[in-house]
Length: 422
Image 1 (cartoon, rainbow, N blue to C red):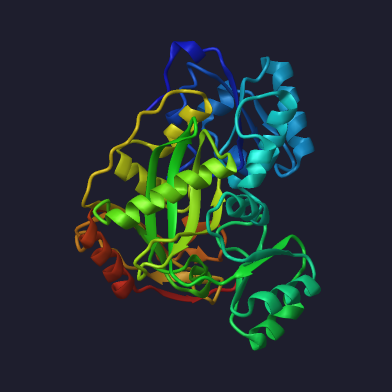
Image 2 (cartoon, rainbow, N blue to C red):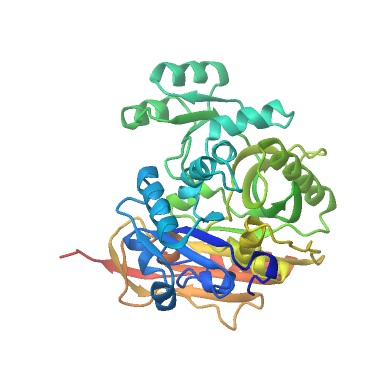
């Protein structure tokens, strides 16, 4: 799908790209989601992001290569250089979570539409977002900033074990620790770097993520997913995956959607995709979701693909449309149909050579796609979700999707052997 419209044909769009591999396991396909013949599109990239650009883009677009794509000064200089070469920039696009704050700051400085720095911070700082959500009347865990041993121990004395310690501005469960008792606390304390941390009470219940698109403060689509395992377990060599909640689960489905709408409104997250994580006790007679965290971007791993399968169109294209001020039609999801994904983690022993993997093609009826590392490939823990041993994507009748995901977990096997890099 390409974005069309005569009213914005002359707009100059600048994209910050740090990816060599995009959201569909290939290069980031910006030409697919934005017609480069109808827009003037320029790019700010680092060395890795430059690898993700097609030959056509490299030959026909203004490209500014920066040494450090995390540096606001580098990004600002590249932005201003592009304007000198190609004229005023109308929109600044940044799809990666790691670019949201800098792009927000630059939009503020240049008077551009889109997510401001304050809005971006609401979706990056875990303490700030919980303060705002809590003040709006929605439930959050008990939480506190955690910049010293004294603050951490004060929180433990107040909340008791178990507690969760996490970085305020990281994602994908990186740097998260769950401490169940004093013994675990004493063991990890010497390894904690008290820099930009948050601590919060541990909440029992099912972990959900909700992914959607908000335009003009209204949800254009919103899809809750039920995790099969808490995400942190992926880094403990347990599979990670989720299955979308069926609309037939009326109380749960509608309750999660309502909570999501109130959350994005409270945080001022608008005209963007979002990825919300929350916890709910499914055994309770009354649904009371607990806010965990949110990002103002599409979910990672294979979530964009699962969302696209359900809405019947490319979710990333919709993201670009709303950022460009284009209209996006509402989505009506089918009852009884779900999508889901399953990620097989790296083994504990790294690096290693892949010896054997498991294909489920023709064996699981709802399997749509699978991505397998092949014999002889090196697994070294790099490359994120796209380089793990195996990924599976499902769509079909809800109960069958659940069965197929669980069967894949049970039946998946892979073999590897030790490998020493020269």
